[in-house]
Length: 93
Image (cartoon, rainbow, N blue to C red; front, side):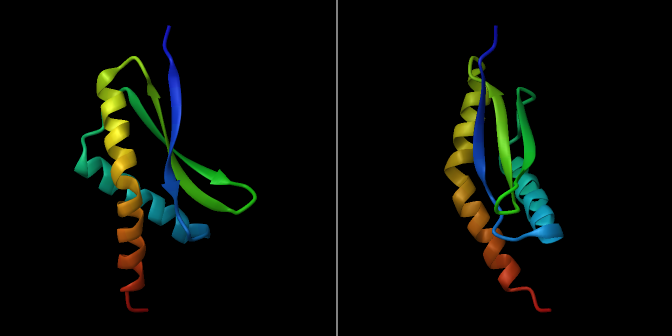
């Protein structure tokens, strides 16, 4: 029997297509920093009330590699979201 856990890795402050793109960038950056094990599933979710999009990790708590990866991802997620937001502010329109 597996113990599947769900952990939020944060959400975008943007809405619409911009939020989708930012979540996609976040996922790509996160997976490039730490190779994601097969035991972890990343899912883009939408909060219906705020219309914001975020990323959630589902993992088996009995798998030490998955637990370790999720802990690393949680530790860096806030900084990574902030970096993506700052990078977006610097883009000339």
